[in-house]
Length: 246
Image 1: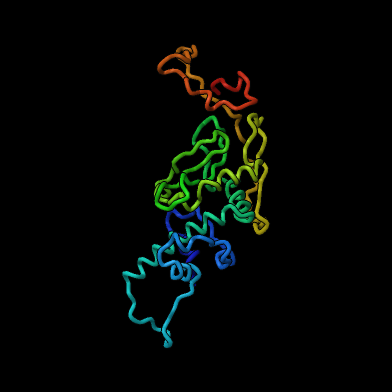
Image 2 (image 1 turned 180 degrees about the horizontal axis):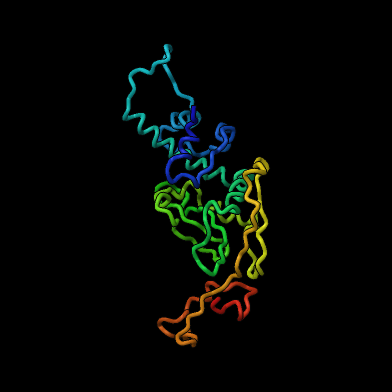
């Protein structure tokens, strides 16, 4: 029998999610404060943990389907908030770092980021406020997911802390400005089998900034169409050659 957590994570567009261990959910400390944020909290929690009430003869009676629908919605909200908290634990960060390294969330759509991995992030910690975005640690910007199935995923399931903490905890995920064709170091979870690991090296291009030119001449920074905000992409350590169009 498939558990509620496995079922939820297998829904279309939910591949960004991870299956939160039941022992994490059963620890009241990890759920502190959530009871006042979710309707039908106890029932929703029982549904997530597959603790269903049944009559003595094993047949449910007098089922209120409207109420059950509300409980199901509350269970989804509760799991998103629990998921947000689990991701910033040591286990959650390590698991997501492995997924980022294997490009399960894709790469930054910005060409001059050189194929840097991205991680899902939220613009708010509250449910139903903003949809999930993808954060790139190389240009420090967020982007819409490229696949439509992810456009309706609630960003609260990942929160505003996770992506930043992930790349602070695993700086090796962020390529240096001058990668010089080096292969990124692989990060694997201790439970990952050798057969499932992708051992092919992945090469990263140098970080750069697009230089606007017309007939070979740079566009003046004072031009209405010039690169006025180009400095936002500048990083300490870049030289004049790095700024040129690659």
